[in-house]
Length: 172
Image (tube, rainbow, N blue to C red; front, side, top):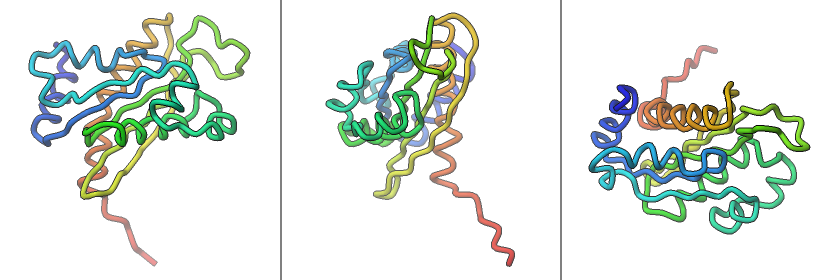
């Protein structure tokens, strides 16, 4: 097992986190990677693979207007996917991704390898969502694998932003 993956899994267990995934370009690879670990049922709640725009809207509640305004490969869509997955599950952490793994970008001017992520956390009856966009190099499945690993590796970072907000410098 990858050392980073192992540390994230211990983090999930120690913090009593239940995870749901909402995947597009990784097509279930995040959940599959997590499910390779014996005992994953204690922290892996469920997984959504919503490849088409219609599935994103129907299963996760992504707004058609968001897709129209920002594109499928956007942090706005990733955020709505993560928040929708939280609402549709009993998890308190959601990871989502949407992007272009290739081999081509179709009629989009977004480069192949661009993946938008979101991480949503339910903590103290509040949902906090973080998002970012990253570009990966390689062939289609290399991009998908790198994106899955990246999404998992960032869970602890964003969860710490929720449970230990950095003190704001209030210098006038």
